[in-house]
Image (tube, rainbow, N blue to C red):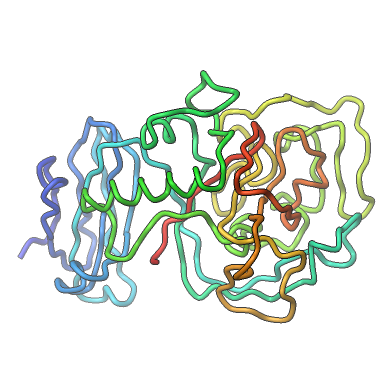
Length: 338
């Protein structure tokens, strides 16, 4: 029995399972100079490692110093665990763990300048956790998977990709899934996709109930939007003559993240969601919603670099023709069980 896990570089490709007793000894990943993504899988028993492992960790490389991970010690890992590492030689989106939970979706009646299609408020329960892109998909990530860069504001690889249709975004997710699955980097049944509208707002709020993840107001310099047109949930929109307008998307991660480590959920680019557009939210209480079953338009969230602060609220929603591609529209991914 191995009581410490040391994955050599060849171990990433072969995905050798290693058992480790719970305790202070870390899981050790050897230095890996190649560019790509490392996944570490965990299960309480060996059969589950092959059929239904959890993703203990995911990181982009290179990792010149290697990595040390503390083995999980909570249930079901109270006595032992089995672990496997896999390597994907590509440009992968960084991911953040989003826990299962319940939140109130939509705009409260007290919020200034609310629109009818932002409600009624709905109690939403998401019974599953998922992983979400820490950033909007950038141009280098899109180019690596799709072989092209459609962006109007091209030339800076860490800017988010734009001028993508809903179908383009879905195709990127499908190709990324197929490539990482072939490398043994995804548990059975897991796939990349666009977030549902409920997942998007839940992740954007990150436990908050205010108009923005930052609080009740969006001021110039807090996000990439038209900084002259600020917003406060109590007083509404206001004009700031000194406000900043960058007039283009910025590189990802330029502004403060929300409490769950997600960047640019307010402004920068509109983000495609999986759902079809419905004029109203369902109201009352729902579990794991995924939008109307009929309809043409898809949901867009988050606002963009040329929108006012009001449009960039956590609860603002808009329809988009799925064939539309503009230099204000991009996306981020979710990785979750099918």
